[in-house]
Image 1 (cartoon, rainbow, N blue to C red):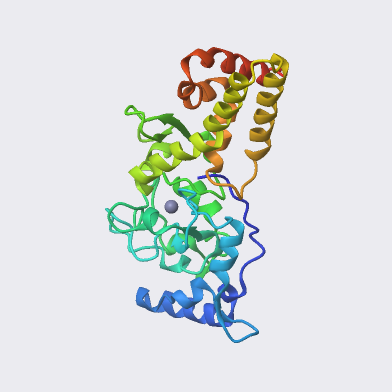
Image 2: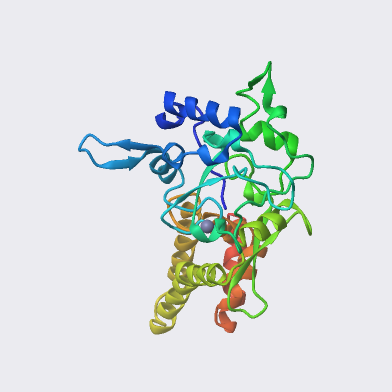
Length: 307
Ligand SMILES: [Zn+2]
């Protein structure tokens, strides 16, 4: 998960259409959640050429660069209701049906992160109290300010991080699995904190994700360092400063890349480059033993601006 900026004013038209307004009114007055229409929250529309499109899916796909809001895997996206629309698991709350078409409540996710049994689905634990429809009203009408995720999060204090509100860097970190066969995500704010709970709710340490993170780090960093090292051995006559400048160029590349949101695993790429400690834990240990000290020293120097 990484922080994402969504323009809250640029709402896809189908979510604020007369059809959506009428449908929501109907749902609220009958409390019938079966009237919630996926065509509306997906934003179904007809393109100029007559083909069908989903405006909300397309907009979220663009904002999230085709990645899942929770695990960052590239995926065909599903529209996820951050606050579940039908029910809240392990409570007697009947779901936030009045938020079914609310732009700040809609996130793009992969099937795995949101599936029933092993994914988020209807889970939504909070520290305070789950808001009801009555809590979101003013003068007998739905209050447009009280339906926004930002407002609700301030009052309910949910455990699940919201990528458009929270800064995931403050809650999530990475470490090499004890088996050495993957990279797992860990929570930074203690056992049962928001980081820990977000990982648990979305199952962000499922096996394929552990392996994907490790594979990516190996391809993206470790193998590039090894390639530079290989050049050093195969050309012993190349001066030492050439090797050093190649390593520096690589670090500079990785630093530039870490803010490119279109690339996979943004949070992991940022994390690796953030501190000597992180770089040592995830990268250095994967290098040939005899080169570990020298690469670590280069990274330390790079971080101090001395390389
Ligand atoms: Zn996912």
